[in-house]
Length: 454
Ligand code: ATP
Image 1 (tube, rainbow, N blue to C red):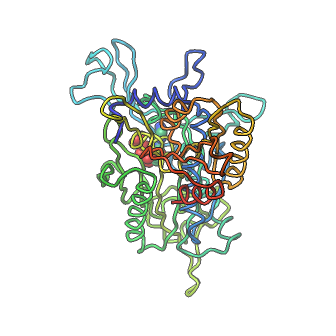
Image 2: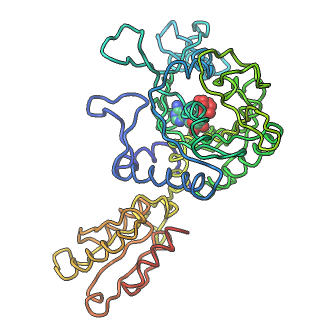
Image 3: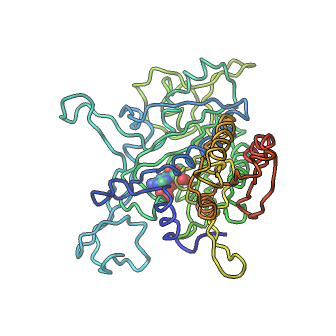
C-alpha cells in the first residue's frame, strides 16, 4: 500500500519521532530536517544495507569517508564552479524566487500567477565557508555538493594502497549540500542531505555493458528494500538534459506522493572525472572534453597489466539519495487496514532489516517484578545478538503497545506473561498478520535472526 498524500507521512514521522523540521522551536529553517529516535535508526539501517551490498558482499569495491569541506580546486576542475547552477527567475510582482524549469508552461508565477518574471539567470548551488580566522574571501572551502569528487581525487591513494585492478569501485556514504532555490516536498528536496555513491572504474569499451549491469543491480536492491519493481520506472535522460560529464544516464524514478520523480541516477561519466583531475592530461588519450589541469600532482590512470600502457578509466556512477530512499520506503510501507470490518489500524510494513526497532519485549504486568525481570533478561539476550534495537516496553498496556509498534514498523512484539513463569513460553505477535504464537524463550534468538536476515 502507500500513503494517500504526503501529509499522512509527515504527520506519522513527527508523531512517532522519525523526522522533525530543523530549528522548529524558532520557526524552522526551510529545506533542513532532523532525524529523531526512530529516524536515525531507519537511516542507519538503510545505509548499512547499501554498504553491505556494495562493499561487503563484493570484493571489487572499497570504501571511503572523505572530508565534507572541499578544496576549491577540486570543484573548479570537476566543472562545478562553472556549471553547477540552476536557472533562477524572480517574480517582479510578489518578489518570490523560482527555478525556471519548475515554472509551468503558462509562464506564470506559482505564488501570485503574475507573468512578470525576470529572464532566467544561473545561480550556483554550492555553499561556501570561510577557513581560518580572517573572513576576507581569500581562504575558503566548499561544502561538497556531491560525495563523488573526493572519490576521484583519492583514486590513486586507493589504487596504490589496495592493489586493485580494473574493474573496481569506490563507495562512499555521506552528507552533501545544495543551496536549492525551492526546497520542498518534505525530505524530497532539501539543502542538506546524504548520498550513497559508488564510482565504478572500468576499461573504456566495457562501459556500456557495466552501465546496464548497474541499472539492473540497483533496481533489484531497491526491491529488496521494499520498493517493488512495478513502482519504479527507468528514465533514459534525453541527450539535451544530460549533465556535462555524462554519456548516458538512466534515472530510477519512483511514484512519490507528490509525483513521479528521481530516486537515483546511474550515469556513465566516461573518463571525464579522472581525466579532469589528472596531471599529464595530454599523454593519456582522454576522450572527454576537459579543461587543462596544471595544479594536480597525481596521475589518475590505471596500467594495463599485460601491455603496461596507461589509460584513464571510464566511470559508472550509481548515485542514490538517502532522504528520497527513506521517503519511498516509508511511503511503500505505510498501510491503513480495516480490522474486523470496522476499526482502522495504521502499520508500517517495513522490511525487518530496516525496522528501527527489531522487537519490543512487553511484560504483561508492569508491576510484577518476576515478569519484568524475565522480560529484561529476554531484552538483554536479544540485544546482544547485534541485530539492532530491542526495546523493553514496560507500559502495562499491551493493546496500546501493539498499536504503537505496528505504526513504527516493529516486526514482532514479545509478551512475557504468567505462562512464562510456569513453563518459559513467550507469545510472539507478528506485525503484519497479527497472529500470535507461543514459543520457548530459548527459541527467540533464532527466530529473530531469521526474521532480520531474511
Ligand atoms: P534533481 O534533478 O531532482 O535536482 P539531480 O539530478 O540534481 O536531482 P543528482 O545530482 O543526480 O541529482 O544526485 C544524485 C541523487 O542525490 C539524486 O538521485 C537524489 O536521490 C539525491 N539528491 C540530489 N539533490 C537532492 C536534494 N536537494 N535533496 C535530497 N536528495 C537529493
